[in-house]
Image (cartoon, rainbow, N blue to C red; front, side, top):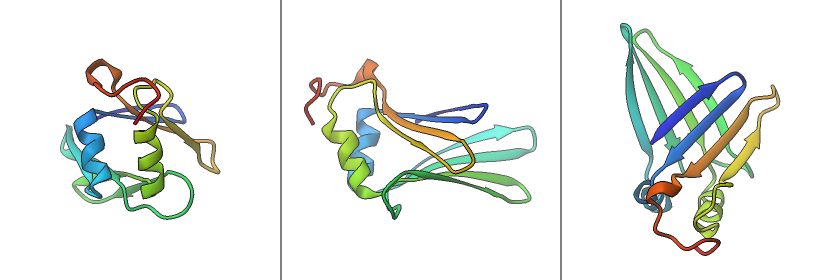
Length: 113
């Protein structure tokens, strides 16, 4: 999983294998060391509601960046097949969130899941 953080923009890019993990209902996570802290980025496929949402939780030694995605949205991403579009959502405060499957190693057919 790769996470790109920009001004008012979060982009999560996963592999085809990681998509299969999400389809099985399991979380993905990656730890990144930043100075004396750790950033833990997580994709949780057990989100509720209709759309993706992000949450940031700060701790003394770690920061947790969580992407919560409803299971139906994981299925939607899978059903897209090989596509650059991915899923997109916006938060109330203007944050743009996207989740994409990396096309470089995606063996799925274009437009078919």
